[in-house]
Image (cartoon, rainbow, N blue to C red; front, side, top):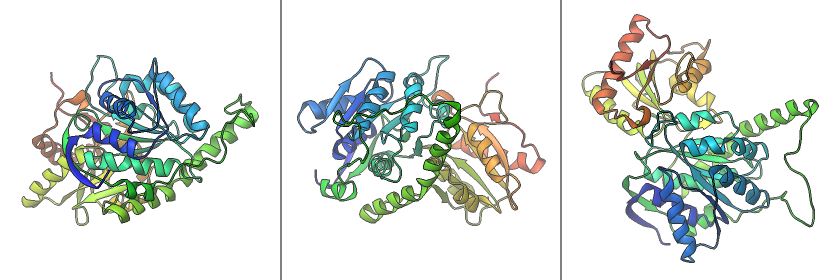
Length: 392
């Protein structure tokens, strides 16, 4: 494939990226809104364009089980899912990280039942935020395509060996047609070498993996997982830089827009960042000193980069897209409050939850959230969260 710019559905572009990454095994089960990814990959494999095992399984639980087996023998492995599929997969999702298996997943973020919804929010990924996977959030189709390659590069690094989830918003991105620049295969091969795993399962040298852990060793095993994901951070930075050096498109754990001289900022994750930037441009013309802070790397959490971006600001208006039921706020806001606790120059945080199950959040809604959040901070009204747009 030569370098080319296409107008194409984001899910199809991600499937093409998986094929360009020359994967060996695809564990596939359909669930809206990620189905187009595995459908397109099935066509690519069936047409002989990719020499890979496409395994159509009976459930998402089985899909992740297949991925664990294939990754354990050293195969470059991919899957994708969403929402209830991730919930069914969760048991094995935790095991994949604990066994240090470098699986890459495209996670099309969608709400969880009940009531049943096929639309976008971040409830599914927040459900497994503590499973030990590396989590990357993307804003648009180009970032979705690019970060398939960076995810494999990170996951398969000998010093990392952890699974990576590329989070992209259901329908807002999955089914959207956007202009996406495809890299040529030579560039991909240069960036992503063939996967050579050091310790693999093999019938000639049988070993056991993931065995029963007595209390005497379980705590130490968990500390090894914590140590591993934190030590992955430099590799993530390096992978993004090298991708940028090749393509001109750079990624960072925390990204900002017009925030250098801002008194207050809105904090987003995922596709909402682009709308937030448009609204900030408009508010800047009105004299508002506002900016945007976008969290791209959710796990491992980029503590120092986040603090560097926000310390000295007066207020952060944090936009969550999931509820932590019974908690002190949305999951993102709660973590950001913790990250800033007792830090000199820490801004106050005002938390909004919006866009649940795909409810539209317009530019005017962003404007209202930003200005209302600023006013609430000025009055000291910063406890809990506000479910924006709640009727009745």
